[in-house]
Length: 293
Image 1 (cartoon, rainbow, N blue to C red):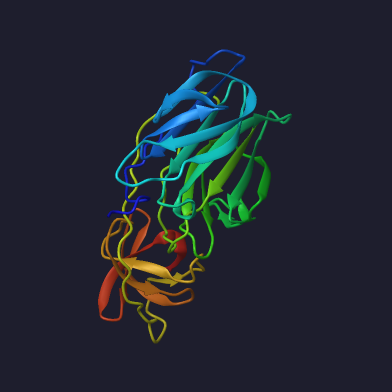
Image 2: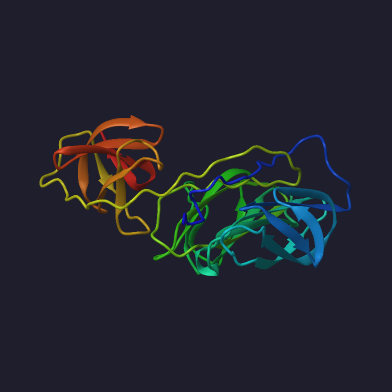
């Protein structure tokens, strides 16, 4: 039986500002799930996923997702969600065979007094490490960052013994974006999980999540500092970094390298570094390596 989770197609919509806004007093909700599920808001059946409803009232409500019947009985999921007038709340959920291996996030916007900057709050289960490439969000959940420049961001949430999630979102001036993440138990992966950008006005596109490869051997460090160019492995949430056969999270894992180790740099491609380790070659994620030329 195939396990549910990151190996399935993940539906998500990208939201951004446009000239078309819904009613001043209306709130909106977007829900995506794997597999398809029925959506209940305060007990009212809104339909099935993927779902967008732009005619809701501002409120704090109970959202419940009930997966559609299949060969495997999956647990339903319930959470509290805040709906804000003039903004869209987004929910992404991946059902697992148990609650422990289910994962997802909610993204909600709330208006702030500061019209000239944005703010961000990240909450997670369990409490987790948070980082973003720009350094504006870094620390442990629950985390709050104020007076952030509006724009696209990627926030990565990770914890030992849980699968990492990377969430792409859009920060909007005058709004606080709250990301509430539930991590799934399992081996950590440096894998970007497609998630929606979030602003007060909706539209969208689809994205895909790649399957997790099988584990492979651990490699050792270069005995002496290599000639330039070379890369030095940075600290990672897992304490090691995967080496893959191709510059993609979908590629097969060939080995593991450790923080502080240095390896000759052979090539670069789309944020990935090709390195020489032992007598082999492979690719590592550039966000966990420092390049020296």
